[in-house]
Image (cartoon, rainbow over all chains, first blue to last red; front, side, top):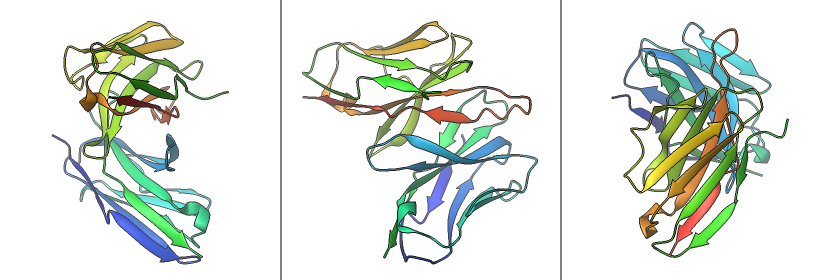
Length: 113
Length: 116
């Protein structure tokens, strides 16, 4: 059974700092990995999707990497801003698992002024 | 596009009552997912449909839960009878396999259910 872990569970950084969020998964046979952002009381917003054949994806200040063999992904946020404060979740789609996503428990990020 | 639409946004009901949650996926998407999110268990997949057909309902907690997708633009999740432990935020998501088969999922705003 695929298990997805995110460390740390919570993170507080000063504005302007570069930071890295971690995601690890136990079954490396994945089809893709998706990073989401969730604001309090809101739904999930898709940030980046990395196919299993890709090493990284970039969108603006965000860069996600994938190392399938070691079961790890990182989300790098450059020059963090208070507006980046949210919970960040990663989710994997397992090969042969249909369209199912298995989610991590999330990292709650707070960027302080 | 308006994105995934869910209704109601908030629902408060008494134990034993029937609850129906509704979802309209993004037009043209061919997969629809129902999730439940709680502090204790995080985000869990309940059931998903491909082309209106239920594919995997292994996450449905028990027979009190049922889901239907009568057409490509509408789905319901019903709880009958409801119990306090069903209190959670219920999300609907939809996706479309593009030419690269990415299956990126887009989420609705959720329905916050409180059963007293």
